[in-house]
Image (cartoon, rainbow, N blue to C red):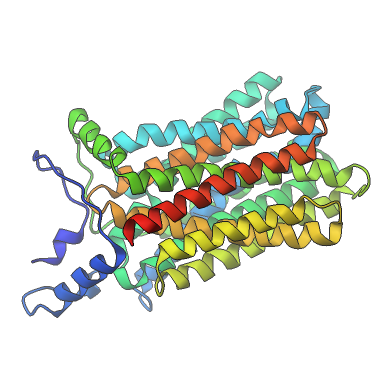
Length: 435
C-alpha cells in the first residue's frame, strides 16, 4: 500500500464511500505504511524541525489572525455603533452576526467548489478581498449598507476556513497534525483577541471608524506576508468534481451521525461564545459595575486563555482520546457560564477565563475528530463543520440579544446553559457510540 493513498484523492469518476476512521486506526495505518520496505518514508509530509513546516505554521497562524481580527472587529464597538446609528443592542449585533452569516454562506459554497481552486490561491484571494472590504467599511453612509459589506467580508474570509484544516491534513505529517491544527486555531484566537482589543482601544480614543480602518490595515499586512511566505500544496491538485458527485459526497457525510453531532456541538458552543463576548460589555458598563471602556476592552485579554487552550488541547489530542477530552471541556464551559451568572466581579472574571479556555480546547478536539472521520472528503467535511459553526454564531448570537434588550440576564445565561448542555449530551452520545 502506498503512502499516496493517504493524500487527498483526485476525482476519478468512481463512486466513493466514506467510512468512519478512528484516530487509533489511522495511526496504526500510518505505522504499517511507515514500516513497509517498499513504501516511501513518512517524511514526505513536513514535520517539526523542517523549514517548510515553520513557514506553514507561521503563515497559517497569520491567516487566522487576519480572518478573526476582521470577523469580530465590531464586537467591542456595539455600544458605539448602536448610539451612532440609533439602533438597539440586538440590531447593532447584526454587525457581528452578518459577518458570521456571510462566513456560513461562503462555506456552503466552498463545500462544493473549494477543490476547484488551489489551496494557496483561494486563501490569498480571501485575505486580500476581505482586507479591502474592511478598509471601505468606515466610508459607508448608512447602516444597511454597512451590514451588507460586513456580510460580503464574511463570504470572502470563508475561503481560508474552508481549506485551512484540509491543507494541514494534506501537507503535515500525521504525528504532528494535532499540534499544527492547534497552532492554526491559536492564530484564530490571537486574531480575535488582538482585533477586539485594538478596536476597543482605538474606538475609545478616536471613534469606531478609525478602529475599523486600523483592523483593515492589519489584514492587508498579513495578506502581503502570506502571499510571499506560504508554501503551495505538494499533496493536492485542484480538480473539477461534477456537482452530482459532490452532492453524493455531501449526502454520505450527512448520514454520518458522529459528524452530525460534532457539527451541532460546533454550532451550540460558538453561539454561546459569541453571545458572551457580544453582550458582557453591556453588563459590565452598567450598574453595579460601571467599568470604563479601557477595562471592558481588557476582558478580551481573556483570549490569551483561549490560546493556551488551543495549545494544551493540541498536545492532549496527540496523547488521549479526543472524544473523552471533548466531553470534559464542555463540562468546564458549563462551569464557566455558571460563574458568570453571579453578580460578583470576583467570580465573573475567572468564570470568563475558564469559559474561554474550555471553549477553544473543545473546538480543537472537535476539529481534529472531523478531519479523522472523513479522510476521503476532508475539504467538504471541514467546510460543513465551519458552516454549522458560524450558523450557530449568527443565530444564537443574535437571538440571545433579545434577553439583553429586556435586561433579563438570568434568561440570557439560562439560554446559553441550555445550548451548552445540549452540546455535552451530544458529545457523550458520540463517545458512547464509539465505546
